[in-house]
Length: 218
Image 1 (cartoon, rainbow, N blue to C red):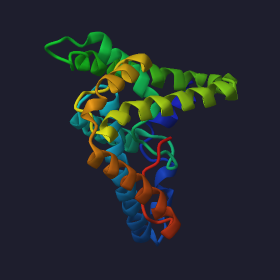
Image 2: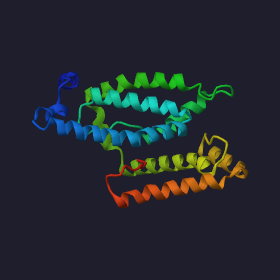
Image 3: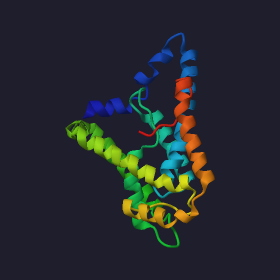
Image 4: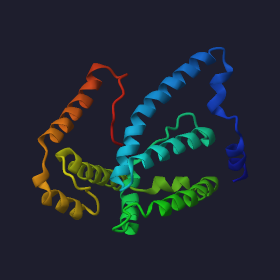
């Protein structure tokens, strides 16, 4: 445990080993280019995930920026990528739905911030104890099923935006489906056309060049 703690507190680790070579300007240029591409992908993803979780888009931007900064400064590996995670959407959405009020749909935001602040030291402690290996015991079928469930949840949440509905699609699976059916009279063909065009363009870009950033859900 103490060796893990010493490694964590060491500000100079393997992430900076390439900066000691003569080609460090090229390393800086490549890192900045990679960071720009990740930011181009992470910012809209953070906004979308925040909206899917019942938060404002700016909440996602701020959270993504802080997480990226903290991860870059205190992370222990140069191969890590920090950004929004779709796996947390159901939990955050449930928390926001449980604390929202008719007057303030974002009443659970302060409680969410408190949970994030408390969970950080808890994760650090579990890492020092080496409990991360427990994740290897989770069956593959559970991981795949959980991922597919997240994909369905996100798709159903954004379906209201694609159809041009004026209501915010939130709540449980049944609640979302009911809201969409009840507001189908608000269907906007231009919104659907824009969504289909975005999907086609996104899927077509990779065929042109692998260096063009594309948005993909985990």
